[in-house]
Length: 309
Image (cartoon, rainbow, N blue to C red; front, side):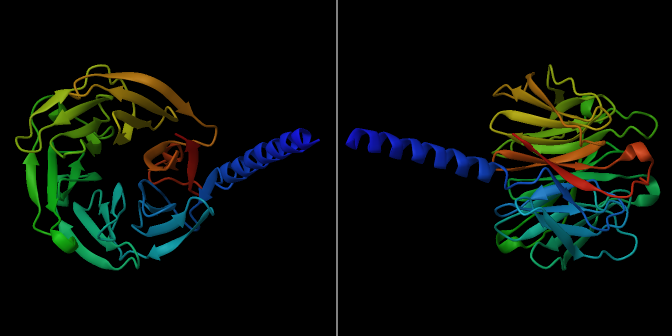
């Protein structure tokens, strides 16, 4: 009898654990809606299950929670701003946002949405598209999708923002498509030590490394990702968002970042021209831009789709 009771107790524990696991797995919704958004493009994760997303055309910033499925405006941007790619500096509670065709970059207080800095990286009259940003080695790095330029914005101790500088990219990543769209350099990531930048080139449908000191670039062999936009690089893998293919490709990258092989392709019926990806634990958050409805898009709503990593 004691053995039977013990067996039943173990079974109950296993069932209870399985139930708890299923409940935890189901605690994340499949979709988080951005209420009132008229467009979307960038996404970044912050502390815990928090995330940030932007209204591309208006420049407004949303803060939400991937677990609860809630989202709300924390920044109603002044007229003329835009919101493309973004990243969160968690230790300093700062949100860095690429300003698109304005030629600007914005730094917001991640808690309140208040302006911390507005930087004019490029002259919009000369053609610019500040498209994406990554944080690496004490700086925010922004891509420009029209000229072959990358901008470095220093971040000093305590989150103090320095003066931006311009890096001219040479080699294959500097290829200009000749007409827009598609853009040239788009998504950006960096090696853990900040010694190498990785840029996604939308027109070429591939990935390049860029030396942050010299601007010299080189192809990552095997990184065949047509329609690539935003990218995420972690633990030897790159996740590349492919807009009009409505998919996310996971690639394993060699230790010297010279070659890549496809590990898997992630699809979801809820993808509608996704543009950016961010990670939260074992989940990936992908934002739909819905450029299939036009530019600016005319869709009635915009959302974040959550998938397993």
